[in-house]
Image (cartoon, rainbow, N blue to C red; front, side):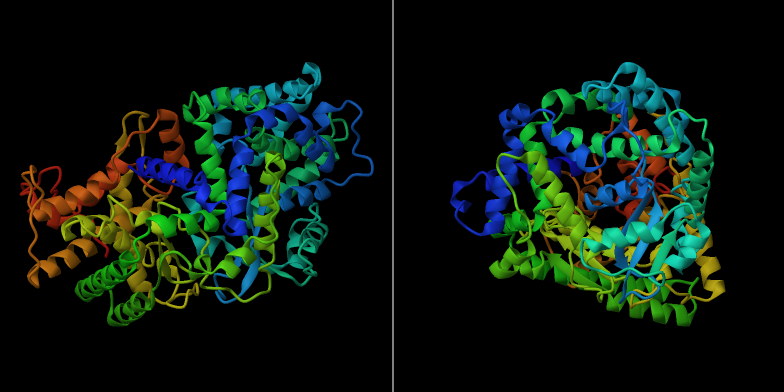
Length: 633
């Protein structure tokens, strides 16, 4: 269903972007059209051939596999990482600026393990995947005129290096323990732990781009310090091997530049972009590229999302839905607070502070106000320049724009009104450090919500999403943050133990679901946050709906369907998760994803719902009304 909703959104955005009546409006809207047209101009893209990538590689210090005369003399691999970071490409480790989880009003530098060239670390243990990956690397190098012998030698070393790197990554399930992952220190302290990575050189040069001074005393939050220590040891080991061919400096340059090349193929002509297809078929099961216009809409919305949102909101967003959503949030929050009173595993102090947190949840609905202010929208994108003839450079421009906005937040107060995702997003969010729930304009659409839908449809749709996001404030991660968004201990040890016991019920329940198509079970630990939120959200939304019924709500049932309003509530909840997946995609999401597959989000949640069993008269002990149910919120 989400795929269908996103496809519908793409069609609406295409219509808006291509509509000539908007051509002579605001500068950001003109930039939307320019970027979109540059992406669609495949004739120009083909005519330019390799030149844009060649220019980029020259700026990065070249890709050694292409040049038999390449030398590391006079070069420093840290400087290549700096240049890549300014294009928002982050091999070896990720860095960004965000609110400090222990001081949520302060923006701080943060560092984490890298994302690699394969979707999951487990793929590096599967020969079919690594063979496809190495072939992909070699095919691309050969397309760019590398000799086959040099490609075999150099890229084989790249794969060997990345395999070792993959072994250092923490599993997704273990990364859910934020308190364990979080380590705050100065750059001086980090440098003492990792002596082979010149952090001062890296960060000083990166932040020069936004005129921010970095010192040894600059604080950083490190997630998975062990990864950085292991990376440091690997670098030391590789450097010490002076008999290697090629040497470490060549291999690391080959590796980090390869990841940039891999990401840029989609911005080039068909010969280069289609080189990804055999690799993508093995990884994701995709056998063809999607329509060009859809790619171009996606790129435009990703990079100019607040400008495209202005078009979308002006044309399609019903302002009255803001008021209705606010009313629903209030009613679902009231349900949450009622349920709090009934929980036998919370003591009075925990219940009191949990209610304070629920009451303090802020909401952001539809869109940020600034997109309706012409001056503010102009200012947001004023530093961006686009050219209808140069799609490749336009893409790079937006990568740099994104990077500048991120880096420039360092040492500034946290802006809790900021939207991190444009309103043209079919999703909803909870931010624990802002204690805020966000519902973009694009999700306030059917089947989640429509002003003319009966309440039992809207409550089975958007109200369950509201409850889901509220419950995220109290899942295994959200519960670590207080009402002000500060990560601290605010429950007693006894309450924590009781929470964990009930959470383990959900972990075990979902962990026993087998996805038969790939013969793999769900990771109950990794998906527990979303599963807890699904269960809580459904319970709260149904309670809120039934309260309306008790207060006198009477609505007609849908014609032609022999189901009552309660049953239709659950039907709308379930239909949102209808869909199918390729086996390859299922395997990847089961390994890395935080969400259970759609059908188990339905089955698992409804098996725990006594309200569902009553509505459909499920016999006690039947598959959808088991005697032992899991319940937290």
